[in-house]
Figure 1 (cartoon, rainbow, N blue to C red):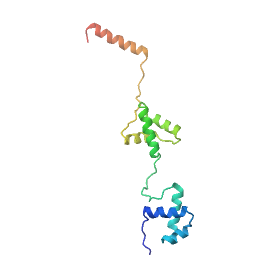
Figure 2 (cartoon, rainbow, N blue to C red; figure 1 turned 60 degrees about the vertical axis):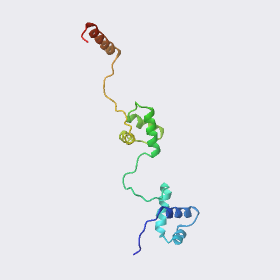
Figure 3 (tube, helix red, strand yellow; figure 1 turned 135 degrees about the horizontal axis):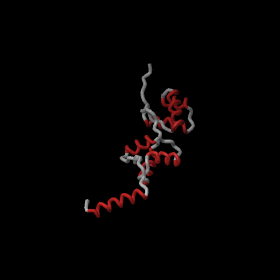
Figure 4 (spheres, helix red, strand yellow; figure 1 turned 60 degrees about the horizontal axis):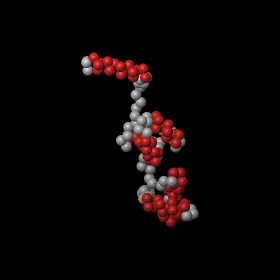
Length: 145
């Protein structure tokens, strides 16, 4: 049985370089002494995502790229009062990537920014404010405070 060994980054780069120069997969495999199926898989992976490094991760792929994460951080810093839902909507309208509210919250948490959570409360009207002011003024004048 043939011994299996991993290709290092330099050799992968040489293979892709030769294929980009116009050599056939069979020629490259014969020159380097590597099975043609390995060359074929490497070339296919390079054409699919432009990457030839080994696949270490078997987990779920990330929804956002590092550039989109930076955009999220800059937007959050500019608009301090934005909620995670607001940032999610801004990201989808600006870039076109649909990102959930939880993802935005998690990404910002990794860099130490925490999106504001909206508080459910009834906003005070002008009448409420006048009532509160008159109540405070009455206490101050009565000598209770």
